[in-house]
Length: 129
Image 1 (cartoon, rainbow, N blue to C red):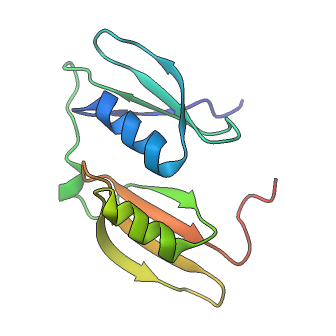
Image 2 (cartoon, helix red, strand yellow):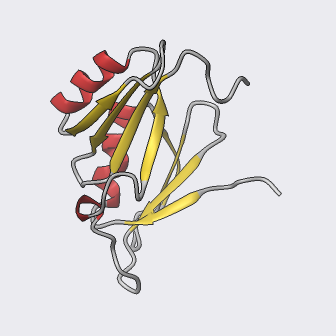
């Protein structure tokens, strides 16, 4: 089997999808203009796909209330400091910053909807493809 996508039931899937495309480098691969307003977003290699939708039949998690290590999405960066500044200017909020070893810089933020985002600048990439 191969990973296809993960999904989040959110209050504002259209606005979130636009923000993720504008500021995190994702792109829209499929959308539905009627409820539940599904938006499928992919990374630049179309290897990781996220679905955002609004379905009233299921609860919407308040990610801002959860500790950032309960759930976060990590994005690879070649300059974590610059990306931190750029994302904060775009509406993200700062949580913490760590450098677990030489050459690695990890920044934890929350998107404007409270979902934790980790910006990862690593000396050695996790995925070498």
